[in-house]
Length: 218
Image (cartoon, rainbow, N blue to C red; front, top):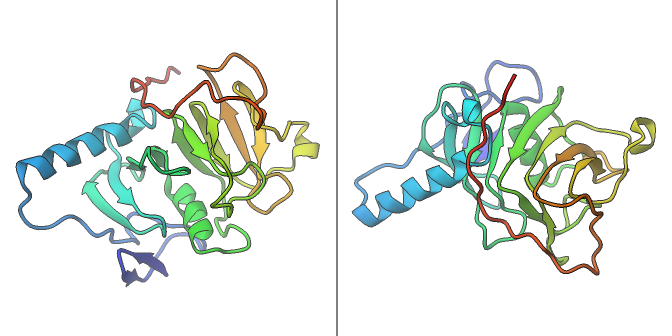
């Protein structure tokens, strides 16, 4: 069952432990909105679309997500991806672009489940960067913010020792976040940092500001 905007929608079809846009009826905004509200919605959509590659975001659904994972559609898409604008004034609430399995992974965290239930890796882009309370657990809501540069994530249990990857936040390359927990996943980070490892003693040199939408090349 997926709980969205105080209403419950039964899943139908699809693989066990995964969400699909056909199975989840995301509530949409209804009624007339003022010019100010329309302008605010347009700004949220623009911010959400900067979170991922334009090849994905231009066909994605844009939805607001609250702290419990409830989502309200701002713009309906067609490619199975969902982009959210986030709240840059709240730690751990960045703009992001998620596929169906990544949505499942985040829903499991919001529900407080001990382990994710998706049956295949999820993908999530955060090309505007992010802030996070902890590198050790997804359930920390009180620790000071850790700034993280633009990155993308493979949401699937990774063993850092087996992969030979580090477990500390860094500005370039890959590391395993939430290492040693069922929510451990691969974190791939790039510019604008210089290649230095993050330390809690460091003063943040980067803030969560949306960058220009990026185009991928194949």
